[in-house]
Length: 422
Image (cartoon, rainbow, N blue to C red; front, side, top):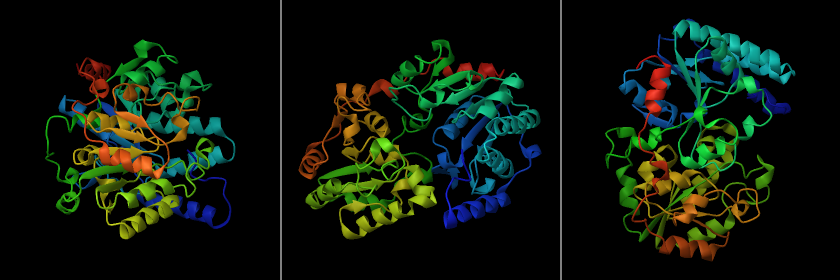
């Protein structure tokens, strides 16, 4: 993680100002409550809302489930926290001054010193919280060092579903920085991880976020209900399509270079929206990174302008709405390469994948092969007529994809035992 990136001029000054402004949100390490399980999560992963507070769809959902089983849960925000802990679910400990110093060490090339510094910080957190297990969404080397030295197990919660290739972050890394266990959410990810680590270190569990939407049609949480104005606005259309956008096509990753000229929405997708103006409502949802980060302001402005220009585009407030709630009201889903296709399949919604890197012989050809096999994904071309025809003709499937409905086994008990609760 680099708080101070190798940029120059105004951009670097803004980074510094932002970093030091975050100090007002800092916490004392001693303020961490006593807990059985410590959950570590980046603020950027807290994209949902619950009880009016920013909520991590994976970490906080899992924490809620473990809490219901009798575990005391503590929470830490790792990385810079721009929000006050009072704005975040469970009021997580904020480590801003420590993360600024950690990033400075890394920026000057002292990476080992940075890892050791972070390890000492987390050794103190472990001591004050008296936690017996750690769950994290990112494999921070210093955190793993601290857990190892404190002789407590650490779980890495895999950030998503359906990854057919091993995590690049575990190739050639310090083996002592590996977590003790990996929490996988599906069979595909479990199989890919098993090429890197022994199977007994992989714990496959039910998706903690999707589980919350599985047994009820309308959730009791008011933050997760769709606005009635949206429901009324889409009722007159024959079809409703969810378009999930992604970061990465605006110069961030070389593999996607040049695929989307403006880096936001391909012009052929825009043309398909225009072509289906009378028949299809398009609900546009940003990636969580595009919602929050300053560098993606032009992305937000671009989609806002689409909503103003095209009557069948709905955008305002949708990026904060839970994906499962949106999937309940749509007929189909269009994306470049988002793993949201798995959530869509869980909700019986078919997906059209448009990224050419998923074609045979390309880098991501293995992506969604399981979903293709059951008709939940179609890989298509970036051509307006083809896209328009697909969204007008595609409807919900009769059966959802059971690959992410992993039956409850001993996964939760595995974590509870590690925390000496059962």
